[in-house]
Amino acid sequence: MISVKAAPFSFDFEPSDVALIVIDMQRDFIEPGGFGETLGNDVSHMQRSIAPTKDLLALFRAQSWPVIHTRECHLPDLSDCPPAKRDRGAPSLRIGDPGPMGRILIKGEPGAEIIADCAPVDGELVIDKPGKGAFYATGLGERLEKLGIKSLVFAGVTTEVCVQSTMREANDRGYNCLLIEEATESYFPHFKTAALEMIRAQGGIVGWTAPLDALKNAVQ
Ligand code: TIU
Image (cartoon, rainbow, N blue to C red; front, side, top):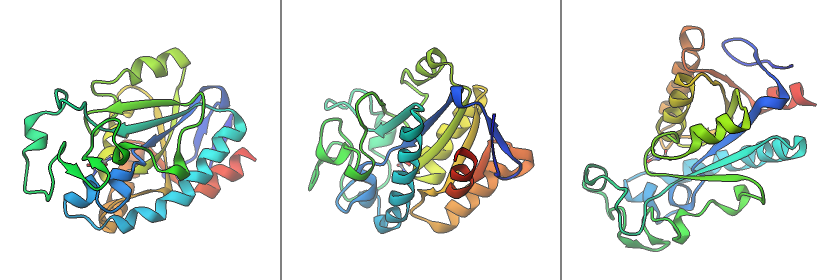
């Protein structure tokens, strides 16, 4: 059993049944000209999450623990994109429109790819998801069951949207979930702070949070 000094209390897991889920570290959310920016966001905030996520990936790879990456993206014909998602608001470009990194949030386009610093390596699972949560309309739940996973460590962007949605889905399915604090970011710093607080409030109502060093110290 490995015990991480986390909040609201220690996060204990067996090395044999833990996996890392890195949420949506895609150019579309992190680089100018992508989906995140079309929504009016300052994407420079995302930069802070890159080095810690890279470190966290290295830690899991060094232990040979499973790593799963997700990508929010849609099929080229948009058949998996609800009109309610595409038509909402007044973005500068809509999902599927051509942008500087190809069609916005479309599978196979440069913008939908994971940034080089966090790119998957051979043997790592990549889950494409049409929604914010990674369990909806993907095979993720079945894949985790087959792997016998019980504890999930989370990283990625954005904290209060796709990361929190996926943690909530995982929590309802019985997983213990730990979010690494530096390895996630929001376009809105106060939303990140609030999301971390609400995840660990009420005795860990959604899960745990911890600094990266707390996990490193527990593992090494
Ligand atoms: N807009 C925003 O903050 N996030 C998303 O749309 N998707 C993810 O969080 N990946």
